[in-house]
Structures are given as C-alpha cells and as structure tokens.
View 1 (tube, one colour):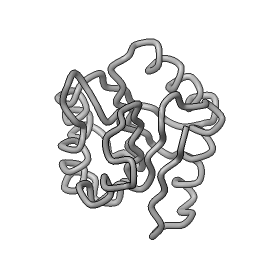
View 2 (tube, helix red, strand yellow; view 1 turned 45 degrees about the vertical axis):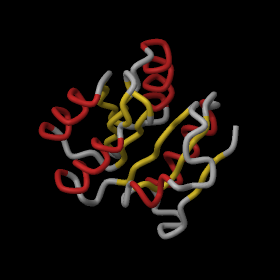
View 3 (cartoon, one colour; view 1 turned 30 degrees about the vertical axis):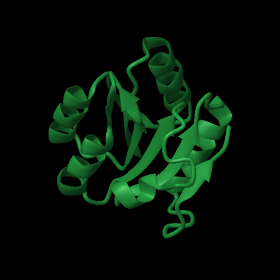
View 4 (cartoon, one colour; view 1 turned 90 degrees about the horizontal axis):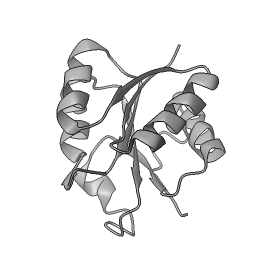
Length: 131
C-alpha cells in the first residue's frame, strides 16, 4: 500500500484531501504544520509527500528537503494557491519535487496525480498543473 504524508494547515481541506486519498486506497498520515510533518517523517516512511507550499507563513520546502534524507525515495507533490514560482522555479529549490498542483485542487485531479506519481509515471518530468 502506498503511504502518503499530507501536510495541509486548513482543517477542512486536510479532511477532504485525506478522505479522497483514503477512499482511493492510500495509507494517509496527516500533519498541520512543518514540525508535525518532520515528526511524521521520523515515524513513517512515506512514498509520497503531498505538501501545501505555504504553511503558517512559511514554506514547506524544508519538509521536502528533510524528506530527501529521511525518505530519499519519496516523491513530493506541492499544492499552492500562491502566485510564487509560476513557471516551475520550485523544482530548482526542491530537488525531490515532482508536481505542483495549483489550488483550488479538484479531488479527482488530486487522486489521479497521486496515482500517477505512485505508479512512477514520467519520473524525470516535473509538472506544474494550472488551476
């Protein structure tokens, strides 16, 4: 079973994303801030990190970078409603970033993209989804 670490600070979105991923058959661990996510990385080894880019005014790139050591085979999918990095610059900042999903995120698109990454699709081709 594919293990997903979901970092989302909005409780409603966290619930919706977790439910959609649970229903799709993933083992989902949640965190609401960067510290919780890093703590989760010490307890489990996720296959995929699904990270809200902006958490309480800070970026979750530190979590992605830490995952490079704690779970080096994990793929990172960032989600953002921010206008930062509109042309994919995030892939230069976070070496294990695989996808960027723009909020609002459609739940079908979310589960499809997670499945795509879990199956190893387009391993060397980073992708920025436009909302």
